[in-house]
Length: 357
Image 1 (cartoon, one colour):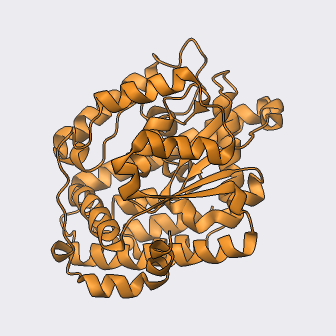
Image 2 (cartoon, rainbow, N blue to C red; image 1 turned 180 degrees about the vertical axis):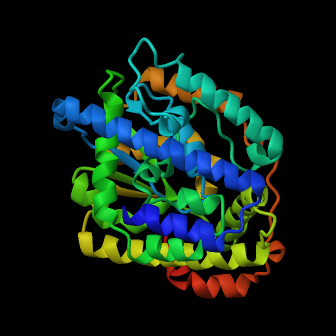
């Protein structure tokens, strides 16, 4: 497995983990290998799993810190949507049934681990809210194929990220992504459509439509300075836990380079594919001002029924989760050795696109 080899080399030779980081990453890799093995074994025993249909999955693929997480969480409240949950992406075996979906051994294990993480990184929830039963990004799914941004969010892995960004088998990983969803729903927990999210899907638009021709894409937007500084802040705080040699300036430069590259790739693919009727663009500032109004636009765009139950759930979620409920995330380009004009130059194609919305 090329991804695993690249990852192990980068961890061993480049990442400089501290004792906690080394132990945590070792445990993570062991868990992923075991999970992938058990999934493959189960699917080999039950070939019907791969015959299941995945119709019109929804991918939220805006760049980091553009409102993708809160949008994912709100849309998850519609009973028509099924999202992979955090515990499912960490301990997927066995696939949950309707009876075990909300209470099982995997759930309780991850609940304890999250509690430990939040004690070690007290400001994590302020920067990126996460709960054991919250909808999870696809990073956790693609990690089982060792082709995931997730590992770089924990440690600085330059050679792995070069391979990941430029040379990895994205189509193969998206095919595994579909098999993973088929596996999750094989236990009987299904809805009308899958609701998925990952900013890194920006670099996989061709592959998404190859595997899911009827996919729907929600692209969220925000100014590049906010994207880079907020993303670097989150990643730097996590890397500090895993390594004593975290350099915020390196992290800032890295994130600016990666996300400008990923958007350039996205816009090239988007123009070539001609799938505009399956894509909607949303500006972060519009979403903040009118969240329900923005959500109605999504439903109208894609011709979805917006049930009274869904609207009631959305309103209840928003009332219980006001913005900055877990504290305000403070960030600045200066903290990462970056200047706004430098970032704007790197994101020149994005700024041109963004200003036309």
